[in-house]
Amino acid sequence: MARRKIRLPPVSAMVRNDGALAVTFANVGYGGRPELESFDAVLAWCVGAEALSADQAAAMQRIAAADPKAAKALAQRALALHQRLRRLFIALSEGLSPAAEDFDALNVDIGVALANRCLVAVSGGYRWAWGDSGDNLERLLWPILMSASSVMVQVRRYRVGTCDTEGCNLLFVAKNPGRRRRWCGPKCRNRAKATTFYHRTVKPARLKHAKRAKQVRREMEARIFKPRSDSELAE
Image (cartoon, rainbow, N blue to C red):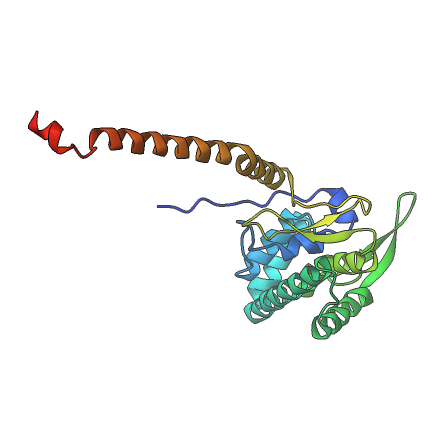
């Protein structure tokens, strides 16, 4: 039986700008999302998350085809970054300090990404862009690293959390510090509320009904199978 292909929906511009791209990347492989199993998987995720244009992706694909070893190394680095961000964000969601090893490694990677960032002139002003990095496969990870730095710097404003719904371990970014967010999205929220409603109302009613039915059944069995006295047997 063919396995149904799960597609990760594109990330909106608002989510990218508030620094949640790195959190979305840390959710890869969790909650039914595709895993980072190869360079092609990493490239497909970057395109789907709008961290890379189609033309840039095609250029990266050609570079990877010409240098398979570099492509394999990039996939391994992406997987290591994914696991590092996962551990780091979970620590933040629990109010703990990240492990020193993860924090230092992230700092080094962010430094490399920043060294390749520059300002370019556009119509009406300037914007950030990546420098002469068209042939560098590491370019795939730089937007994720910049997003991670944004989350770390604005950790008090954008709080990282873990979904409270049982069976869901997705991370999210809560943008309202005055209100505690408990779920990754509407589906988990509705599922959690439905479960709470069931345990508070439906389940107790069913248990009460089952208990009463069991009692009635026992009373009927007692009447039917009641032991008969000697006088009743004589009759």
